Amino acid sequence: MALVKLFSGTESRELAEKIADYYGQKLGNLSINKFKDGEMQTVINESVRGAHVFFIQSTFAPADNLLELLLLIDSAKRASAGYITAVIPYFGYARQDRKDKPRVPISAKLIAGLLESAGANRVMVMDFHADQIQGFFDIPVDHLKSEAIFVSYLKNENINNVIFASPDVGGVKRARTYAKYFGKDLVICDKERRKANEVKKITVIGEVKGKDVILIDDIVDTAGTLCAAANALIEKGANSVKAICTHPVLSGDAYANIKSSKLTELITTDTIPLKLKSKKIRVLSCDRLFAKAIRNTHEYKSIAALFVD
Image (cartoon, rainbow, N blue to C red; front, side, top):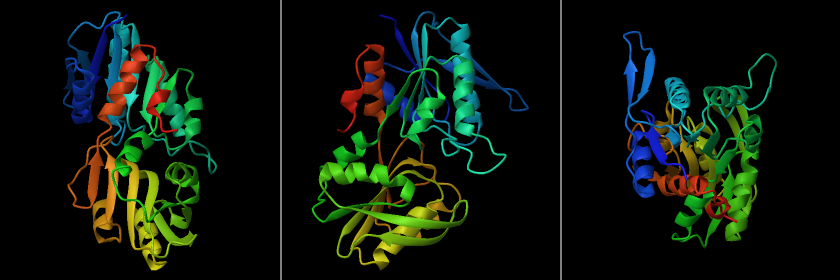
């Protein structure tokens, strides 16, 4: 069986180190050199010939994170790596998965093509914004689910009075997974947008009076939708509102929005490192989930056992 080599991109180093530690080996040695104008050159400082190489890098903004990953993959391909897997905990541009108006790109499809062209043989991600993005690839995709992390956490919490909620209609399937697993009811927050990242109105569909609500989402960006949903739920009589979101993009006024909102707590993962600390934000690591998936992939074992039924 081929030797496993784990490498990290610049911005996912902290998570990659935890994944490597749980996997039981150190990260490989590489360098990212930059010219005066910002141009990057990736150098793998050890042999990868014939090895199964895993590059761990989330592709959140800026675009340098994506470009760095592409260059690393190309470096390994040209160094005769046996098999290359791009481990992308947060897959950027996933929200652009279709043409929803004229003359716009399907960016998620473009990124899939770039990864394949660079030389990736396999991609491993967690919580695509839309499941159909897997179909944009012509190589195997391991689509891990954050439910494995959050369900385990919730099992140790008192959720007797809990009801689950989706902050928008598009996230109903995601929220229903939790409601079904724990045998709880589900409510929906129907949002009307004024424009991107700006919510005009939230309508709560369902009864939440006297309940502790847990909102389920995959991405929290400016937190506008999440906070508006939390405020609307409290106005409808909810005792408290927590939120579970996989990817903490947290751009713009997100931290201030969360702090001033009716949200009791935001529970998220470390697919993207936090820019600021907040008493309202709890981070659960996805290191074990990815380490197990990497091991199962290398040993030709199923990763289905890592999912929540």
